[in-house]
Image (spheres, rainbow, N blue to C red):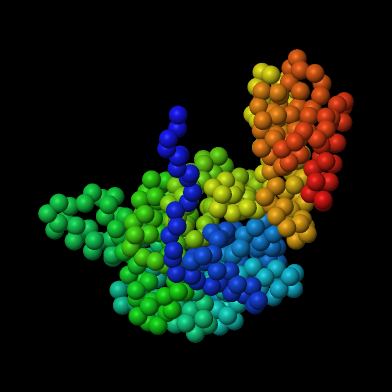
Length: 412
Ligand code: SF4
C-alpha cells in the first residue's frame, strides 16, 4: 500500500528583482512576481519602417510581450521613432527593445528620438569596444539609459564574448593549482562579463532594478550550466534563450529542452526562442513555440489545449486526426477575440481520441472530449462534457457537429 505521497513536480521559485519595461500605459514587468515573459525579435531591415512595424504587430498579436529590433546604423536609429509612431497608430503598444552592437553609444547619444522611443536597450559587453574606449562607450550607453529612464539587458553571447576578459581569465586559470578545463573557463568568463558589466552600470548610477542579464550559448548542457551559475550569483531578472538554436525540429526541441530544465528550476524571467525560419515560415513561429513551452510547464496559459491520441492500428480513418487539427486551428484562430470576451477560455481542455481504449477515460479528464469509433467498434462517438457523457454523435457529420458543441460550450 502506498505510504509516501508522490512529490508533485512544480517549478521552483527564484525571486529576482523586478524590472519594468514601459511604453505609454503599457507596463511589462520582468522578474519578481511577474509571469515569465515572452519576447521575440524582428528580421526585417529596421530602415523599412512599414515592413518592420507590420512584423512587430504580427509578433505582438501572436503573443510576444516585447519585441526587439536591430538598431545598427544612423538610418535605422532614425527609423525607430517612425516605427513606434506606426505601431501607436495601429493600437499596438508592445514595448520595443533596441539591439545595439559596436556603435550603440553613438546611436543612443546622437539620436535622442530613438533613445526615447525604445523601451529597453540591449547592450552586448563583448561588442562595445576595447580598453578605455570600451569603458567610455559602455558608459555612454548607460548614461542614455539613465537619462531616458530605460532598463537595459546586459546580453552576453559566447559568439561575441569579451576577448580581453577571456584572455585575462585564461591567464588567471593557468596560475591555479588545479586549473579549470577550457569549458569551465568559458562559463566563468560569460558570467563574469555579465556581472562585471552590471556592476559597472550600477557604479555609473543605473538603478539595479532596471538591469536584466543574459548569457546565451548554443549548446543545451552549456546553457543549463551557465544559467545555473548565473542564478546562484545574482538576483537580476534573467533573459533566457538558446542562441542560434537552429532550424525546425532541431531548433524547437533544443530550445524546449534547455529552457524547460531551467524554467523548472525557477531560472528565467523572460524567454526568447531563437529559430532560423524555414523558407516561407512565419517569424511568429518562434513566439508560438515559446508560448507552448510555458504552457506545457504549467507556468502560463495562453490557448486552450487539445489532447489527441497518436492513432494506431485500431484506427483506419484519419477522421480523428483531422478533427483534432480542425479544433486546434479553430481555437487558435478565435483566441485573439475570445481572450477579451471569455475569462479563462485559455484554460479549456479538449480531447479528441481515436478509439474506446483510452478515448472515454481521456475525454472525461477534459472539459469536452470525444471518443471516435475505432476499427470494429460501433459507429458511434460519445461526447463528454465536464466529465459526464453528454450525447453520442453518429453519421458523416461528426466533425462539424463536435466543432459546434465546442463553440457552444465556450460561448456558454
Ligand atoms: Fe490507438 Fe485508441 Fe490509443 Fe488512440 S486511443 S492510440 S486509437 S488505442
